[in-house]
Amino acid sequence: MSRELRQYVPNAPMLLCQQLINDAYEKILATRNWSGLRAAAQFRIPDPYTTGTIAATLGSATFTGTGTAWTSDMIGRQLKVNNQSPVLTITAVNTGAQTLTTSEVWGLASAPTAQYTIVLLYVTPPEDFSEFIAVTDPLRQWQLFWWASQTQINNYDPARTATGDPWLLADLTPDAAGLPRYELWPAPSTGRVYPYFYYRKGVPLVNPTDEPVKPLRGSEIVHQALADLCRWPGTASTPNPLFNQMPLMAAFLKEANDMLMDVERKDEELYMTWYFTALTATPFAPLMDSWTQSHAMYQY
Image (cartoon, rainbow, N blue to C red):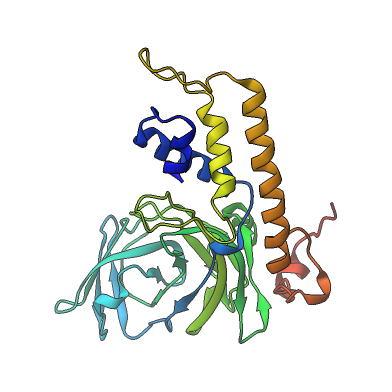
């Protein structure tokens, strides 16, 4: 594609042509969730761990277990002491001393012998994650609400005491690597697997073997890049003959848009995203009776 672009302006540097191709590709990726970006994965939730008791000390991020068998697999899971807030994330486990280190210190009164739960509440999608398509619970045969916010969970359960079958997936702060995290609510009471579909991020074309995502063919990217090339003045010794040629720029853009409309139509025939039909939709999880009976329901 870069070589084809350079045929129009032979003096254009190859690095410039490659950058224009990737800029055009990025613009086109942003116009639609292309079918070639669809992917599938699973959130695997282990059984909550409650064996033994825990000692929590005010102002300390270290917790000591009695009668426990903590392992390094618990790093990254969340700790709840006496089913109270705050929920703390485990960052280290000393299996010999049976101590846990958490991301934040314990801020409540010291509890030398307390009940506790280690459970995976916060889940992180893959590094190429862009957005969810659907998150399902095969056991309960429903979809999870994956567009919820922390404000909504705080309205339901600010102390995070609810447990059971999660039916809501709310946004959370990014993890240490900057990847998005989501909170399952209510807290899972058993181990479970939640399959989900998502859209991947489009990545730049870097290596000679890299290809645009399906069903993009490349020609629409080149024509979009040609319109951008018309904005490059060239150099003092070899000016760009296409520079500031507005009719030509408009022609390149129109051709690129016509190509994109055709590709979008064909893509829509493969994976329909322009409309939603309730006849084929998996039902979403119902609101809990206990919550609806104790809260005023507003109609908007």
